[in-house]
Length: 220
Ligand code: GRF
Image (cartoon, rainbow, N blue to C red; front, side, top):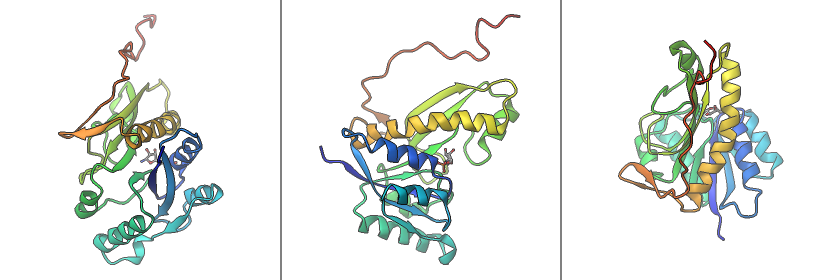
C-alpha cells in the first residue's frame, strides 16, 4: 500500500491534527502526514507534530502583504514536501480562489456543525441561540466560499438541555476526532470521489434509526 502524503494546516490547539496523527499510526491507514504548517507561530498543534517527529513550518500571514503571497508561500511549501492531500484542521485563514482551485478535490476541512447549517465562526453559540436540538460535525472538500463544498462525512449528536458553548463544543470535538480520520481514510484510499459536486462511492452506508431529540420516550 502506498500512503497518500498529507499536509495539515493549523492555527491553534491542534486536537484534530492529533487525531489524524494517531490514525496514521495504524499499519493499514492509507495516509501519512508529511508536513504541518501553522500560520500562528506558537500554535499548540506545532508541538504535537514535533512530538510525533513530523516536519513543521510556521508561515505567518502577518509576514505577507496580501492573501495571494501568503497562499503562494503555503502552496510552495506543500509542493516542496510533495503533499498530495491537504487537511485544514482549525486553520483560521480564508484561502484565495487560486489556492482553492489548485487543491480542488484534494483539500479537506472540518467544521463543527452539520453543514450547510451554521457555517462560519461561533458555531456552537449560534446552535444554542437557535435552540437546535441536534448538532454535529462535517468533513467536506474545500471550495472558495467558507465552509462550503462536497460533504465527505458527518456525525450527529443531540444538543442537551443545559448545554453551554463549552459542553457542546467538547462533545462535538470528540466526534470530530473520530470523524476526521474516518473521512481522510475514505478519501486517501480512493473509496470516495467527487462527482458533480457530490461525494460518491461509499458502499458501506447502513440505514440506521434516526436520532430523536428530545427522545421519543420522553415522559410528558
Ligand atoms: C475544531 O472544532 C474544528 O472543527 C474547527 O476548529 C476547531 C479546531 O480545533 N474548524 P483543534 O485545533 O483541532 O483542536
